Image: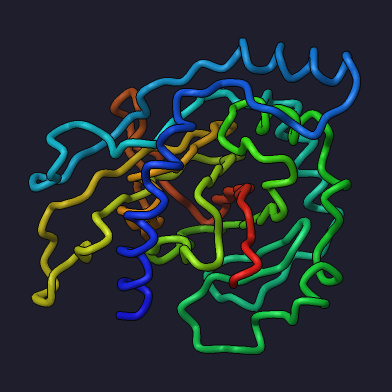
Length: 275
């Protein structure tokens, strides 16, 4: 209940600010030098924001429209860049304190989890010590994410969280805690497809009777794609990944999550001092 109260309050305060950045492609960045700025400009012109493949529940209130502030870019990275990032993550330790998935952090450490384990949250001094340095991430990756304009303030991205999903692993439906995380979220998907379910924050995917009441939309996250959540989509909708074995693809075919299924994601966000 406390989280829901915080959510409604922060939703009113933040929605206008976050939504204002949605249409921006290039923002001020901390990069220096003409070559770095040229790289950003080149990346920005190559972005192709598209409507993601979506499946709508029969009661979804937006009637075929996606929540405001949601943007999707397929092929945000190349296959070779995807391989480079996977090799980078393979060189570091995966933390397996959460049963559903393994994690790595760059920048600062913070676990958003429903598990009542205070020990999971590091102290302010150890949060940075326990994470990998942001500098270990490829320069081209951070430049390209900044070029989307979704993170307009210098140094806004101070945490990149890597998650590894095996077989039918998922993540419970949630809203990033407004007092812990900033207004802008970006998720880069790699290796395998999955569907992310968005549900209005005030409504559970299933009612108390356990039945599916249909007020949801499932977004297909393809390998190498970038999903941005700002404004309405960030504050007023829960997002999660169900433990479904089947993934409906854009061409109508069905992808099966078998025993060898593996998906890795990188989430870019600002960890607030008020956490």
